[in-house]
Image (cartoon, rainbow over all chains, first blue to last red; front, side, top):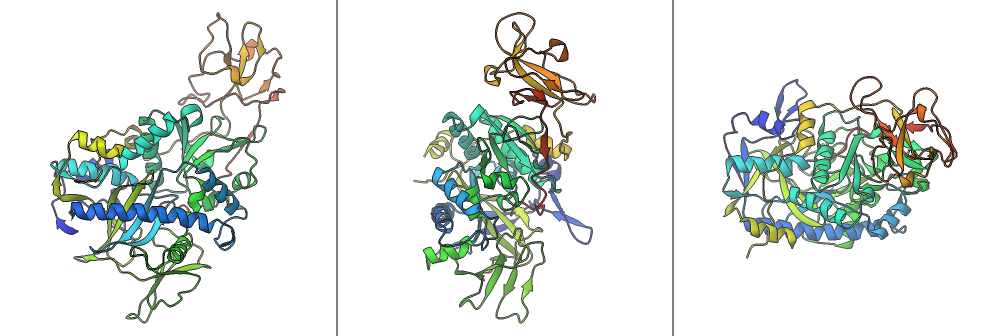
Length: 408
Length: 137
């Protein structure tokens, strides 16, 4: 992978906002702002590199699904150890057994050109989706119309809804979409609106509003929307561990719904959004070339490590311990740090001072594309910048070839 | 032979673009403005919700089952399934303008107590309180 500087498109900021990106800029603590969508550079990858990343991504996802069933087995962890509401794990087991519908997930990979290393998986509430699926694709159309990009995210999302709809998996052929009012940057609303668009494109009737307006109808024993319409399938971008701590989470845990809402992502994804999966993967697949050693609760034999809270996001509450630095690097944040997972320290590659992390998408179990975010510091955090990519070595395939790939 | 899977064409996203343009969510009161029961207008009796499969409107003639919309403000009393309803207390037409005059009203079709009584109450706000306002990751 190479990083190239490039002149941003004229009016780029207006363009990406028109295409749906609500925050083209990131506000900095000193009151200034800098681009979140950074098209003053682009990353070039080769086709061979893409093929390798695809294979690794799909293998890691299969490993994660296996790890989820091990984690939920009841022998390995208690709800309390995982920081989950009491009664969560039995529901996770049922969810896995039913093979509840699940659409997507995103891996964060550290990749220096050889074997990518899995830093984590965001299996429940991954974001960066619209930027990956739409904004960087439109950038490619404008800037390198003859080049290709590793990106079938959008097509695969629409395809997923279409196929499940055709199978009759959405009662009433409809779905609700909820975003939390507590998330004020617009990121959650934007991502949920985009998912809703992909469902509408596939032919579902869609409804949506803020999660806080969702209702419980005691006589029907059902969750209802703000118009009183019963909720049957619902996409939310709100973490399960929070949902189950909420007042209405009790109804889910107690199983009192007459016909339970089909939530997307499903409850088993709690296993893929806790850092506890990292040590479990290392136990199940020791010395796997794409995993880093990781331990639950203590650093074990690791000399240099990153400690991550079980339910942390955006790099918050992370601690980095290296040999060279006498003082640990601590990242402040709001998350519970009583239980930490320790992962071997694996610095991100630096491209002229920009530390790049690969976000690799899984849609319907298939590798679907990538996003690159870069940071100034060692942790990919809230201030990370999204940089588009292109495949430098291959021309864009024709329509028939694309359709063949999608149908594989 | 290459195996990579590429996306095909440009896309236009209605809601996503709208979201970016407005940057504001919608909001609503706690109760729907209207609740609908399923009725047989020829006998003027309430029937099972399942009979009303779509949102067809009754225009004063024809057989079948239709939604009957009742405003939930004021005395929202509904008859039991099988009992007669008062055609003067609601409308067969889907309400189009909000009671406050702004936007579309919220409508709830079906799900009211089969035994009749007051239009049921709905608890809200049970999700989203304990969250840390930080999804994603």
